[in-house]
Image 1 (tube, rainbow, N blue to C red):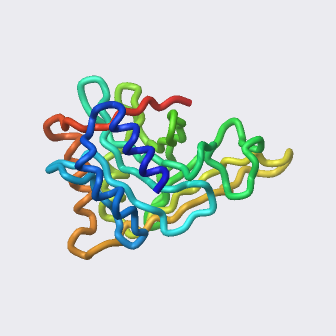
Image 2 (image 1 turned 90 degrees about the vertical axis):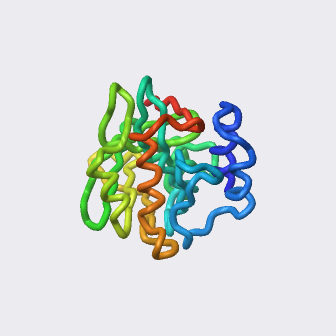
Length: 209
């Protein structure tokens, strides 16, 4: 809920959304069994939020966001944290973060290596770039829309000398949560943001390493 409020606050400060359309989401919060929750009060949502079913790190919510880039738009998977960061496994001090963290997305046993980038108030996962902007490929978006379970695996902690690299943090997202008639439809609606007329309320981000 704290991370969701940060998403809303950032968008409001940018003047990109109205307070009215976000009140239903804030009032009800997020339900891990509800699946994707789309932006409220608009015909074409520019983002959807989902809470992981389980995780062992300071990840609060996952956001599929439509971002304005130059004269077009890209879709990103953004991670908002329960605190000010950095993204780390539970109980591990920030000072043990490795210099070159890595991540992967696994959807129904299909592995998608992804880049791990850090913005001012969130983390971005991407598997391709468009004009230097990180985004998600159509192949990965198809899997998110049609898949059953999404696992986010992270290698965030520096290993002792001589130890092989290993994933040490993770989260599981139930892509089929929510009413049967809506499964996949929210993701499909956000995907249309990247190909349809420019929305008036696309949230902006400036990913940086």
